[in-house]
Length: 180
Image 1 (cartoon, one colour):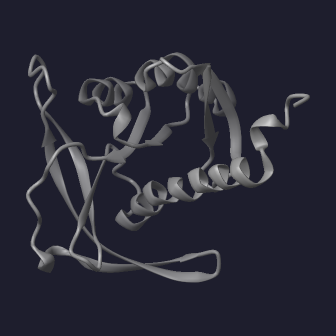
Image 2: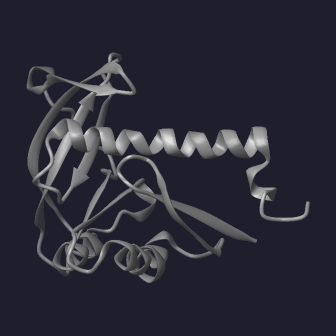
């Protein structure tokens, strides 16, 4: 058995796919396959931003990647104390000709590695407030992208994931490269 990891650019256009054994931990896959392949495509000097879910949560990796010119955008793992609703502001952006508004707030937060063997370090936390009051926490080392850009990249990965789930279910995309 194997797992395919589709890698896209910021415009949600596919760049490459990494196929690995199903037991490959996402952090090992990122270090051994995704970062080297991305570097071969974009060059060693350009900063690389990885957008992924909680499965790859690793403050130690975040710190190391940052030093290597790799940023990340990911959901914050664990329970967080809710922020005050008054902290959130509306940010409107265009997506596919439609207007989308996110209610966002941001802060710098100290991230403490689980082993506590290394000192805590600072990351940027951006939260989205949903209509039902739920707060989605995003952490990133990117300091140069506006909050709404970070939120759009994080939530945009769902559009990509849903696209591939749909094409797999409706068009049997997994069998396009076989004789099945």
